[in-house]
Length: 291
Image 1 (tube, rainbow, N blue to C red):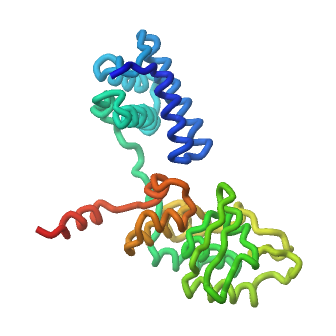
Image 2 (cartoon, rainbow, N blue to C red; image 1 turned 90 degrees about the vertical axis):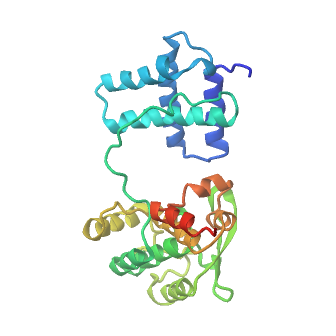
């Protein structure tokens, strides 16, 4: 097994995060800064090659050095998990045999809030929407899984009520995709355009403010924040509606490849991160196996 410089391994890992996993720029920046911190730590111990990093001399001392800085448990865990993921990637690439960070125990911080809501909770969100425009936006997110930018960029010409499909023409990466509309979504969007949409015939956009301006994302998220503070123990966001749509499709038997196409992802690995499966569902899957 040929040695690889730690610096080169980090760059190849960052390339994987950007190209294959399509992580956001802010997340990429966080990973890069965190891994640079670790690289500097081991460089002070004369480590140049990835293969020279081990548990006793580097992984454990790195964790202790973070704790000595009086960082929060959540921050220490985030730093450790970033480096652990680098070495997980290294094992997959067969650069190393073992992950030296696999044995590092980190304390969980505050319990992570769920990233999805149920269909019943979506109906509660719809019921509590401040107006018809927000109602239609939430329904489009929950029943079609569009990004908020895609929802707000929808034009009336993108809706085909004869075939009950909508066209996303301004998706991420300028990719067009076709999304089937459930009967509820098709009916509600048609009713909204005919009855409730502000009367500005020259505007192509589906969702308009009373002034005729295109609806902005912060307006939507402010209303969701009010709903979540009143009725939910989670911080509701428009992206949560997209995660919930994907998870509901998966639980109803849709394949990863189908969900990938619906969400407009380039790689199926990205789609996998949208699917939030409970421990009980994992247990049920195992229990349902035939003898």
